[in-house]
Image (cartoon, rainbow, N blue to C red; front, top):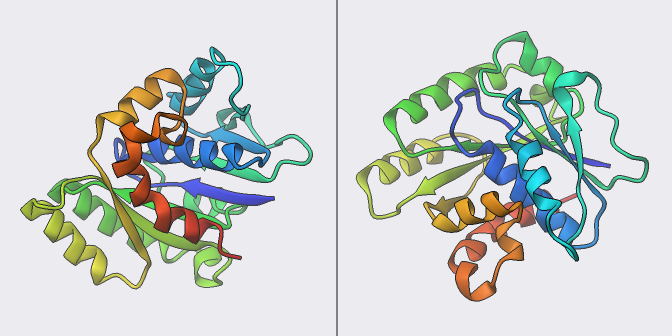
Length: 209
């Protein structure tokens, strides 16, 4: 079973957006997928509840990870984990125990860049990271390439010794998909093609052995 986590100590950076869309990508490819929500707000579980209104789309198992150990169904191919905000210190080591691939979404704002810097200082001290048991990559989320703050974020991420995979647009398509319990890969291609093409580096990185 492949395990993928979306994590950032700062809230509102798009962890749930990435988690739900990654889950739908693999589910639509025919994999058996579980989505574990560690956040007490339960945004990923709410998304799964909305998804029940549709017939003919792949099912995704929901796990309330705030209640204890993760126990996805037998035969699960991918476990996608939506980590809570405010994760710091020893909790990082604990939560990374089962994580093979970790994606950190970062917003293009001075506050988010500073918060990401502090979070990475803690994260890179984790035993699983130093032993290369958990690999890490970064995604710039809700970005506009032609802005000064995006260029500042890009420059900051470029200096890190971590893969900077891509940027995702600030797009209403993510909001529309979230409201309906869908991923953008399940919406009309003519509507979302500009968003989907930005996902290629993320999906290629996740599918690496």
